[in-house]
Image 1 (spheres, protein in one colour):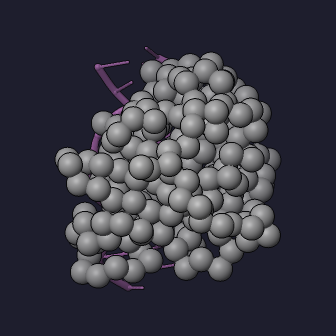
Image 2 (image 1 turned 30 degrees about the horizontal axis):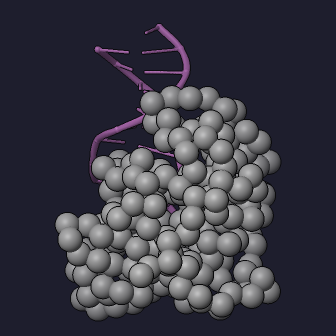
Length: 199
DNA sequence: CTAACGATTCGCT
DNA sequence: GCGAATCGTTAGT
């Protein structure tokens, strides 16, 4: 029996804390009947009310951001640069647009399928060390936007991988320079020493 | 309806 | 290191 994280995990009001807690958890996908999974090693926090790097800032509802305002534990997937599917987890209470971007995972199950989806020959860090890359490796596309992570297509599970708080490193977020002051917030979290994080 | 642009990646120099 | 690829979303005409 998989140990799926409960809704209450996502419903907490501190999106930064949730981002840290997600390091070491396992992201699983079952697409077209095939299963892949990876350990989350890199995340970023986005706050819809105080953070100008967030799509929903300053608390604007648009067709795209509707998912961010949905209930905690939903997947928010959107297309970036017309090419890349980026995967986020919706957190906080319904009506509050907070989310955690998953930026990198360490392949755990279905490695061959991930390599295949990425059109590569063998397993290497380039397979999943970026938000667009891991989405492709796990088979995540915008058609999964709004999927409940407590269902059976996409889940995040606790597999008792021990992560010490000392092993989590905070740094500036990537690719959000346009956000001015908020671009300097130390809201990116990586697993220290992991070769699977993005550069 | 039109135009500008992005929470990126990849290939070439 | 630099620039193109590529298209949905958004805001403005």
